[in-house]
Length: 305
Ligand code: SF4
Image (cartoon, rainbow, N blue to C red):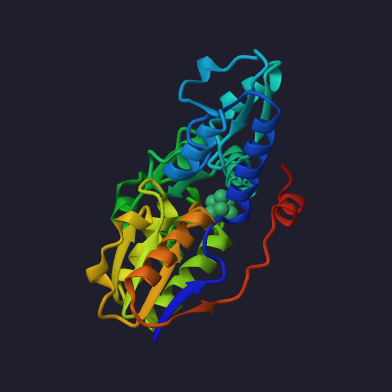
């Protein structure tokens, strides 16, 4: 018998689900454009394209010729959002409420004279967007604790994280800032859904001989899950079932399947079906973890949108 462990919260989080559902709903009614990839999953984006959704990279291409524009889950720069609001372009802002929370915190505290430290990837669209909300030149993006020592001394600092970073790494960054003796305000802006997903990945990896991590190559949260799993047991990252190699699992009877928050259900199912087709014995699916309590409605109520 082969046991396949899979997390209760595998796949789309509420932020991604809301963006995809809305884009599909609008595409049923007419022409839809998304500004950049609405989520970081190539296959999900390809399905949207098949429904006629157009992806544009340059905001200059936005127009009001009957098209509806969807703003991606990672958000956009403040000036672009304001431009859209004051234009007659129809748009739906699918920025995840957790990202909106970071933008608001950075805006508020930079206005109060705090230097801003953001833990994240400076090129990631979410970070680019959050940086644009700072009302100060003193905004620094750090990727590792050592980067903190390059920041000039400023009287007071606010520290936040890109939503998909690992919480323990964020804590290390915060420690470094505190060691420098600044006045420090910290907001834990790591998305709670991704924290739950990382805990679930950890539990699954502990139970498994090998873990298959399923998610888009561009997906930051899938990368973090992979990091968690490979620290515990043999792990392989795949974007689709085709990439799963039979030699990884043939002699294993405890297989974990972990999926990022932007991984569509159908890809997770494909991976499980491929495992079933490779294994000659009976395969039993075992659910790990507990369904998290978040819904788009509850978060939107809390932070507004
Ligand atoms: S992973 Fe978290 S921050 Fe990102 S879209 Fe999902 S709920 Fe929002």
